[in-house]
Length: 480
Image 1 (tube, rainbow, N blue to C red):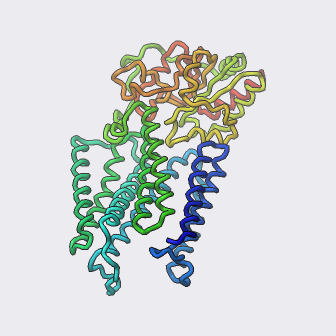
Image 2 (spheres, one colour):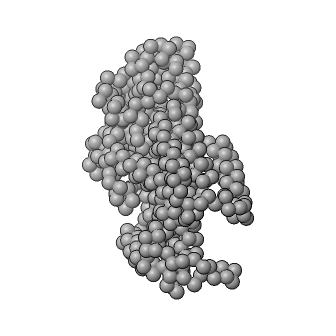
Image 3 (cartoon, rainbow, N blue to C red):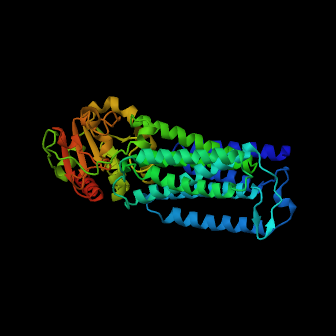
């Protein structure tokens, strides 16, 4: 590789790292995304072969025409999808796009492996490709396995988020069957690594590819909806690792850098979210969390009664409060009520009320879901407070307004040792002086368990559509 290409790749790596850094804040996320995209464009323009020569300098060919066509088609599909998707469907889009990335990485590795296998003939012509080394073969197989798994797993995650599979799908001995499939996959990978040019390598590789696709489906199907943010983050890291392995396979350092950054950041985010849920990754993947599939009856050990409240009463409480904390959840996204929330916050701020938003790491259906929604509504970022920072002062909050959040404020995580979420850190809304929970009904959250918060003495339930209720609150506050 020439020193010029090496220096450009270093610059591309810097752009990728800077882009990821800026993505950590809603204020700079758009700029970070553009910077990272610029780095990827530069990486595309400096495509080079194994001798370090620019492929564009060797004359235009039909393959380059296909690259340009594919890039344009991808840009159009991505732009149309991003502009047309509703904010409530953003998790589905993230899962789908991530799956496509994993599938693309798997296809690249697959084609390279088959092309390098001994005796492969395409269109009647034997390809004069030298035998691939053990390391390169391992890289290709790893990218195929992880990319295929990410593709099929992301498609299932997309379907779950779309509501196509309402409950986790489990059966006795499922983990044992999945374990056996994984052993077969690893066995095939081991054999193919040292027998890439064997006459039976292509057939074994096709079997490996098929089993990897099936394993992705089998891995995600038993996982409950409450764990989807963790699953999406984990599958995203898988896609990054597959891209990095592709980079080794085709000698493209830009892909190695980009894939490694995505893989490492996705893995760290997955571990952080699991820590926020007080559960190991293995429990998320193999525990079939949320498989109860329905809410427990209130009479089954939950003390207290539900106490409804009207919008005018809530408005009065908010107006005379000194400090208000709003806990957003997926219900706010479904009602598309983020703009109404911001308007209510502004009106309270005009009256000298301190308003903060308590953000749980796994609220919603994807990492950072609530941050994205509130940023879209132009809620000042300094009003967003993470769970660890706001919990110590929750007992000094006059009114806590819970909008469509359920499992992330459920005191059962502290009080009920038999609960599936026991030990999970929550936003401690029950410690506030008054809690107002906005919900359509008493239905359980995505984890399928009863929320003890609804029956607390200091909790009142404001039933109805979140957006309509918030608009009513805004009108009442303005009138007051």
